[in-house]
Amino acid sequence: MAVPVQLPTGIRDENFGGITYHIEGELVPVLQVELGSVPVYFEHHILLWKDPVVQVDIKPLKGAFKRVISGMPVFLTKAAGPGRIAFSRDGVGHVFPMHMRPGDALDVREHQFLAATDNVEYSFTRMKGAANILFSGTGFFIDSFSCPQREGVLWLHGYGNVFEVALAPGEQIDIEPGGWVYKERSVQMQTINQSLKTGMFGSGGQMFWNRFSGPGRIGLQSMYFHMPTSE
Image (cartoon, rainbow, N blue to C red; front, side, top):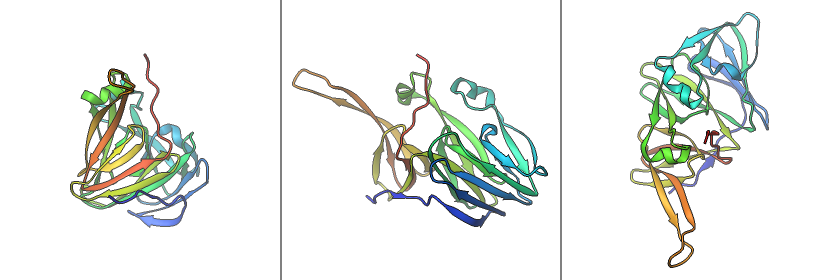
């Protein structure tokens, strides 16, 4: 299996999907977007600054009420140019782009989405079953992004640094459940329960893994993150 490789931490004057953007900063990086004809949407609480001429409005989500139980936002915010706008998350980490072409689709772990161009479509899925063990029985959501017709940019935030590994067909990797950020739709995921034993009749507890099976790319973060849950 290939070794995960760290993604770039800084980008200047990058142009893709009809938009120009920059990513700068070492501890808490900032994404700056130069808006033209293509709007962007984002989580409302990550807006850092904008030019006064940039128009900001609500981008409603279908079925968003179902996400209240997980603390996810019930709406997204949309910004239209011309003008500049910047985003940053309150956490040490790594902001990085995913350039998506027509037909591409990515699954993203909840609370890792930062922003996207308006030609990237968004939906979500609630994970149930064995994965509930990891989240005090409440489950968690996976955000799904796709570009059915036009290319676009999806910006994500990872805690610590973000690495990417490409799995060949049949290759697998086990990742701590709070350690993965995104996966291509072709990558399959399952939860693995590993019992730890201290002796013939003793038990040392349990470990849980998310096992990913290729083909496809997976992103993982060096500072894995679990959302707080109520007991």
